[in-house]
Length: 138
Image 1 (cartoon, rainbow, N blue to C red):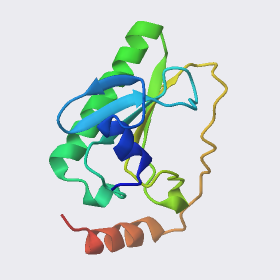
Image 2 (tube, rainbow, N blue to C red):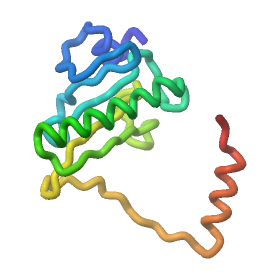
Image 3 (tube, rainbow, N blue to C red):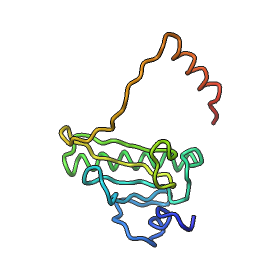
């Protein structure tokens, strides 16, 4: 897409600090990192939603992301890493080009995702699982 900032980055029209590139994906340092070393992995082809990313590209996205996470741990002695992909504005997606965040994590980094934890009523889990199975499509 012509006006997509991530497409422009992948094409080299906007400068970035590249970490990895192959024929399917491009990985670069996030300019506003949660922790230093925070990387974004994007498909080179424009996709707004993870639902339209071809399986081979999606697999490559997560494979490269996990390898970068391991490299961050080895090189900079991080304790772990998060892989995070938001799909849609309601999920927190800001740039409408699929991107996987690789966020290096330390035990004392003081960053919290602020996940809430709800409770299910009796029988509700089974009903929800059945509803998901009913709508699941490959």
